Length: 292
Image (cartoon, rainbow, N blue to C red; front, side, top):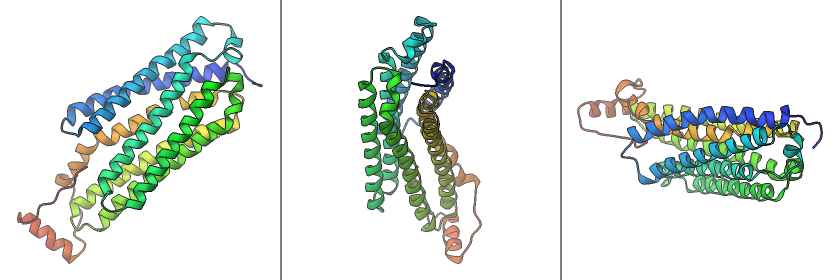
């Protein structure tokens, strides 16, 4: 490892871990909010939120151990960080981060399946394919991380790192586009003004969430390509699992707000068919609901 210093190796990791710990507090808050406000959700989503929270809690513990091991136990021994054996907790941290990425994307894929499984089989198979490919790249990276003896060997796993980051960007982009497409098809086929308003709001949420996670994954990839001989990208990468988790929890927790649109927001009637349906609904002859 050349052109390295304490700042762009351990320092970068410590800064990233500090911000990640702050986001963990937000994760706890959002998880508590979810269980309190959505007690009737299916067991799959309840279990998923619980599993994600447990993984994130373990990740905070192992990153704290990495921090302690190199900053306190080996204080002043820079060679222990650059040339010594990688501590077990760091390798476990990488495994957990990859698991969180794949698990969150799988939950997004599940929500997409529940939303449009009866309409667009080709889209669903594409989503399954990219999610599985991302998992494969994650396994490839974890295998390489567990095989290298020290951080000085990080450049030797360049291909695995680039593959994971690139596939992660692709998976997030495809998931977002697939969700947007499915919601838009529902919007264009609906004549209910309030349903259209709900779908438009959902599309905005999906777009923002997809952009945030995709751009952040791109930032990690660019950071690694610019400074491959440092560990700056690891500091940036520490935060990504928390962004994934909080993005998912924010979407789950926003459903009550979106549902309230049905009572508080009305789009103007744009054609005679929609007007007729609206009039019937006002008279109690038509009842329509959307499950989100």
